[in-house]
Image (cartoon, rainbow, N blue to C red; front, side):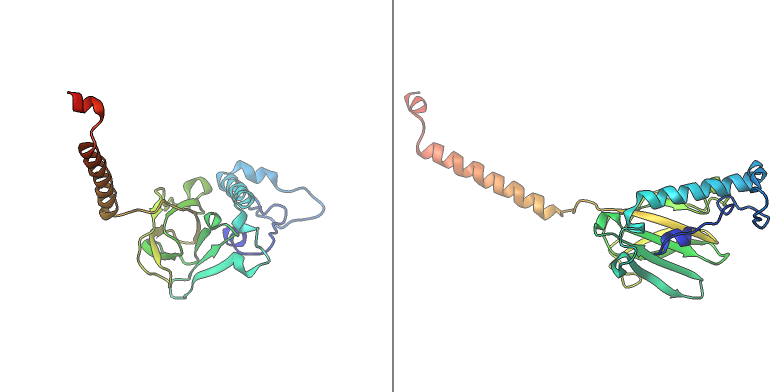
Length: 212
């Protein structure tokens, strides 16, 4: 479901799929709403609700749905891991989403993922979260991109990847950092201005100073 929501194109869920109805749909009877009395089906319903809410509130998932600029592969060649990663984008950089899909039953504790921008990456949805019936292999802390090339991208984040899961990360741009030399030059400039002003005062002291 999360792969469908993350991938370009319009979405379709047939009735009953939102909570994982077991029996095949039949036109001559109602849905098996009693399934929702079971925790697994309620968790599936909550998961579907979260996906729909995510889709509605993140323009990168639909703003450029029919434009090639709205989708970009990060890595689609890791066949040995059965894993793909890609970007969803709008015209605004801050709308960028990173989608990590693991189609294998293997968990990865320290997976390196290439990202395009310096900044913070926050996991906003993980299909393996316990509230959706998963095992809880999630990333609660924000990831800061490091200046290190991975997947032909200039920056890298290190994440935990749950088995048979999809995780989606939002991007937040951080203010550019400056090194110590910048502050030293600012202080030096201020010191020069103070010295210049003091020199002028000593060369041409005010009248009240001359009288004293």
